Image (tube, rainbow, N blue to C red; front, top):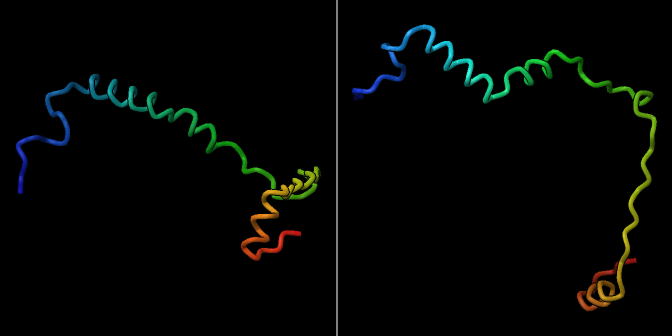
Length: 76
């Protein structure tokens, strides 16, 4: 099955096609992607990230405890 419309425009000049590619590159932010790809990978060593974050506390409200008790769940 053929279509009368081409996937590209043969009548465009090389300058116009280059300008179209530049606009696509700007819209897709290729420069940012290229810079990110050129950066070194982050470290996997613990010594580079020594901070230990405190764990969040989970608070069980009285209403949640009553509901859990009614459903025979044990929240201690």
